[in-house]
Amino acid sequence: MRKAMKLAGLAAAIAFAIVGFASPAAAIGTPGEHTSEWECDTARGGTGTGTWVSAWCATKSGSGSVKATWYPLSGAVEKMTVYDNYPNGYHTYAFLTVATHQENLPVHTGQSSEDFTFNYKEGLNVNFWVCSSSKDNAACSPRAYTMT
Image (cartoon, rainbow, N blue to C red):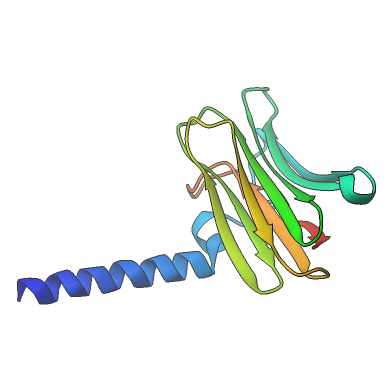
């Protein structure tokens, strides 16, 4: 009986994790959703292999910001850096979709940034956004779009 209860609890936890991973916006917030205390947008810059695309949110009071930046590197290697400069005690999350593959990229509390490296084939559609936490009232940037 005890083993069956443990297995049922494990199955429920796995199912919750899968549902939460499959639809991160439902668990965290909609891209572009934030209160009037935040300013959020996307940006792009650079030329050639030095291009970058960012999604970001910053408090209007200047107390912090969160950002995710996509960098195409050489060949089929890409990098995303997620910045957490908002001292709210929670993880900053970036949500990345390449073609139909989704990634949930948390930056651990207390770290100012974390790099994630990917190896996707060229020519795939990429979109991502960043949120200030995993809470319902998180500030979330609009989606940023680019290609691998």
